[in-house]
Length: 293
Image 1 (tube, rainbow, N blue to C red):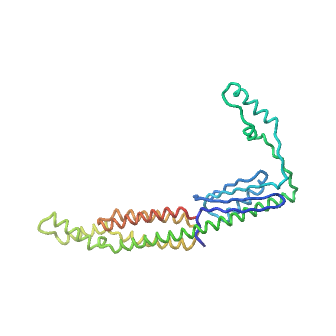
Image 2: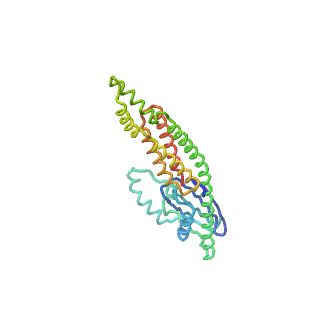
Image 3: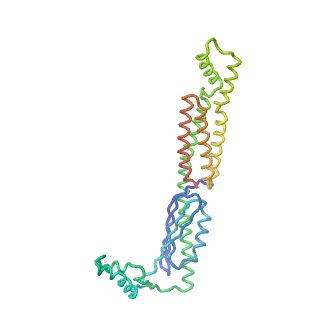
């Protein structure tokens, strides 16, 4: 499987005795799959097949499909509905006479709904069936193009995500090798503080007990182990491909939780700086994960 993004655009066209068909398909990020159709009047029969085509190709994203159908030259005519026009004129006459509004221009009147009547030459049953089939074929081609665009975005996203994971791995290793996180360093810091407060030294046994308690509170090895496990899981999800966006989003939350714990346990400037850098990298990772299907 290949990683896929959620944004893209594609277009396809067809033509025949029914006229010309133009299809535009575009998608943006979405928590689930939301398919929105804009079809010309008379194409209701193809709505369900088109939705199925989208469901077969995508799992997440807001997908918009617009179908435009243009009749062949000479197959349509237009006329003015005089009764409708008179109704609009009568409705506005009182306002015009009172000086509340200006009289509408001929262009404005003709633009009103129902004034212009489109009279199209009807297709026979076979021609209508051919048109509907070609509409579905055109939509299928556009959706295939949209899927290709989303896969191209996914390839670019994978490079970015792997870069962020490499940064997290490096910071995790820095934290593991940080001297301030070692039990001996914790014991030494406690010895210095106690020596400052108590003259004559400190009982070695008591020092060992206090150092052990501090070591437990400041020990970040468990967080570092979980970070390594999360890194391995993220790489496995990228290798498996889409749909994995939701799982990566959950995993990025776990990364953030471990980074926060690392900062809260830190009693050393070096380890704190590593934790803050880790948080910043995790934020960038999660931002990009939102684009993954």
